[in-house]
Amino acid sequence: MEIRIPKNFFGEDIPLTVFISQEQLEDGTCGDLFGKYFEDTGIFNVYPPALSQRGDFLGRVLPAGSEPDGDGFCGVVTEKGKTFYFKGNEIRTESYGLYQSIFSRNKGILETDVMNRKCAVILGCGSVGSLVAMELARAGVGHFVLTDADTLEYHNLCRHQCGIEDVGDLKVNALRRKLLNINPNAEIRVFGGIVQNIPKETLDEMCRPGETIFVGCADNRTADVYANRIAIYYDAAFLSIGFWERAYAGEIFYHIPGKGMPCYECAIGDGGGMSGRVEANHHVYSTQENLEGIRFEPGISVDISFITSIGIKLILDILNADNDTYIPRLLNNLKQYTLVCNTSNPEIGGEMVEIFSYPLQVTTSLVVGFGKKCQGRCRYEMEEK
Image (cartoon, rainbow, N blue to C red):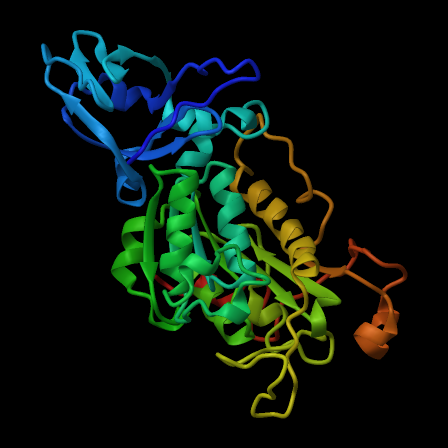
């Protein structure tokens, strides 16, 4: 690749710099370097190994004692690590601790060592699930299981966290690439199928009691019921995020094992008459109708994001419930079942908007109970695993 050296206002060359992780700088290995060179800043950003296939070829690391390449960019192994050169001249190197640097801005708010042990099982990787996964990755969650049967298509892009370069791939694969771009050390398993078919061996390997949360981001209650049952089996928390027509409102439900809470099925089930949540079959969008003649309009990104963000805050609170240094944002104030309103305009939401007193209302008083079969405890918690 052609490398042009940037110049400042006075026409002087801007010093070239290499960004590389401390681990790569000190490992003493030779080989090819991949990443990006930015002409505006004169920075060679050397990608970590997990992302090397996504970068441009920059140059090579040569064995100790080698003469640097006089024509381009290279590195030479030394006793202290590696020294980098451009056209035979040594250039500046800035190393960083990969995990510590990425999550340094979370320090004092989220403990990176605690978050790195956590696992999020994202059930549905569309507009909701992709945002949940991305924010949890930014918060330092180190383990993910991504489940979705759908392919990313162009009509998804106005709401999804992935982009044009990902269209045509499974949503789980596209989202995995985005997560690794935030934290290359994250452990991520993907399953291109529906929740009900997720391999048990995958969950057996990834789910650890007290460290795992299942997040229902699919567009139907059946998947949430099933997901909550699986979460209980693994002694894991569960949280569901669902939307009403045009995302004028949404609902958030959580279940924490061992707290005497009703599960999703016995508390809500199909929703009965208490909820305006809509459901979509796969590939049913705003211009089509599902088998029951109900039109599903998922809403615009900003409305989806507002409700989803509240769910993410609750997820972080739940994951840190046993951390004495963590200060909960919402868990102590929001009930197990929460409704969130984007607008109280009946032209958007119809007659049901009357249950909300004002736009952006978040309910704090709704209480759900156990179903008739529960007898004071969720029956799935009573079954032997």
